[in-house]
Picture 1 (cartoon, rainbow, N blue to C red):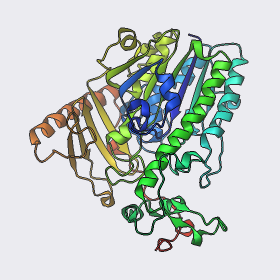
Picture 2: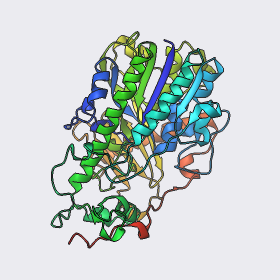
Picture 3: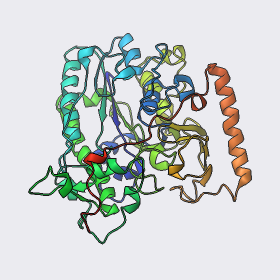
Picture 4: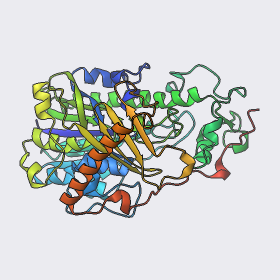
Length: 458
């Protein structure tokens, strides 16, 4: 195959996509693409949120090697650790990106080949994906003009807060009154101290005759409406992706291009009372989509078995005939090519080490049947999460029932596995444990002066 396109759909949890079984038809265009692709049922983002997840996605290495564990921290990625853009640029690929992360994520791209985007964040009119599409197609046009194989990284943001999809998507999955004064389901959300003013800035309906008047804005009161807006944002993005796919078909790019679609992490809605963000090492945040498409080389299939974001870089290098770089760069992930070509359900690993150090500071250990989540001692008390959490993923895939007190032996067993893994990996890297060395970077969002009043609905 000639080209590679890697699409990251920021904050998209797999369980909210219709091709992964969601009750709402959120992703019909991705569903159609998936019918001619390899879909991985259990892809894990091991290190959340955005910065650590994308660093793993783009280097093929875990947090114990790349050390990027926080969001927006002061540490930069070491220059000795190469991104996939740098590696492909080295072997003659033109590299382009539609992305706004900056920092080390722009490495491997010429300045004019790495461009961002802007959109207005307005009620019923946050057209994020259209803005990304404009930059994406411009960048791909630029890459095609180089008359050489290209790698494109395209980063979409629609399911990320604020959820303000344009009409008609805003009403796609909801028909009630989102500001009903008798509905109190949002009260705990607006009581969440770290986020409450942020939520109150955008979880509100402007006055139709005076939309900029903060004092006339009415807070959303129905939690089902907020959840529906997450789904509606996905549906809007999916519609915009259909435009991108049509462009690629029209340009005759899609047939001989390795197209990989994934996400950096998912999103907590109302499942564990962590409220509309991506903290918590739960399935909602760590289970992400992974779709690998290339009609010339990949047969349609759905594959079980655990794989991770770490496996994307070696897969790209394998399919592009550059697998020698996997060994040279000591890439830690495993190529998915053999799994795809043999229709195997073995996955690439039996267990995954999980971390977060953004709003909360936790470690985790996930196998095919169990998940252990451990407190490090540095998570703020406001989140009120247990120190030890144990979930049986076979019986409780949503991770609602903490079995830590009932199954101390299983906790001991999984904790020992995780500790053995850490001892070995830290010895291999010779680097500090970033969970111990680094502090959380996120403590509060929002501006009280811009927040809608809480008493207007009553």
